[in-house]
Length: 289
Image (cartoon, rainbow, N blue to C red; front, side, top):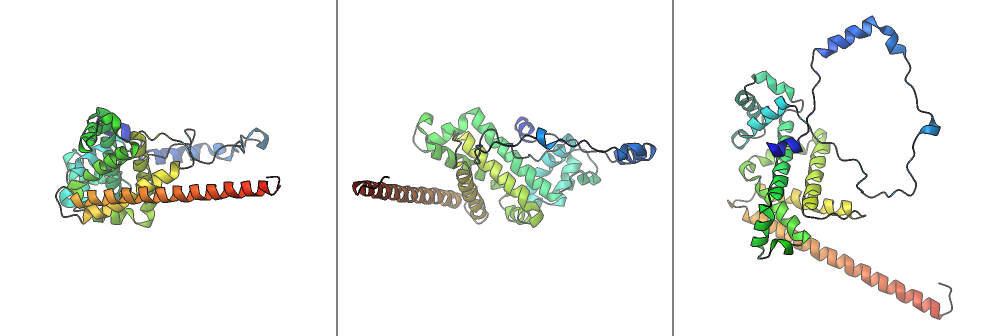
């Protein structure tokens, strides 16, 4: 739970009793509603500098986290134990509420219902992944699997190891994960689903030691997100108990990505050589280049 507390910030729900109180105050003090709000003069507004970089930097705001109260966290944590049997469903939420000592009606505390249970699973697994890295044993195991010392691991090997470790956390729910993917693909749920996928890719790259902040910040996260999302689909069809086929798929995707990167680099080097040759030829003809 220590990892969950860092991953899931708390958000206080507004009690239902506060609405009548606000209405009563509005009736007794009507003058407050007519008070105009103060507008900031345009001269005092802060405008971004035109030289500010458009790619990601440490100054950019963090993506919003899904947050839960203590009651919501207790219900969702208990409900996860019922997911392998009942899926990410209302039944799992109801059983989780009972296990946590709440009435069945308490599931109404979760405004998104079953989708909240999916988000909680995703966010809690991210917390467990960070916890394994902080404990120090995960990278040692990845290094042993690659026949290397932990200090010899490249960033790509760390990324691949973290991605596979996160996918293996879905073993206990892989039989019901297709239904979860279907819920995440609903139009209303897509924004938060993509936010969580981006957060996972960002965590994996950060934990692997990739701290570069440049124009490729987004493309690296997009690549990791694409590999993870496609591997999840393969996982639901993998009949092997240890997800051997899924792991082989991830390996192929990393190899394809490396090959594509090498080709793009080669094209760039060839173009640069041609450009330099053209400049040299122009200068030999007396052009002021």
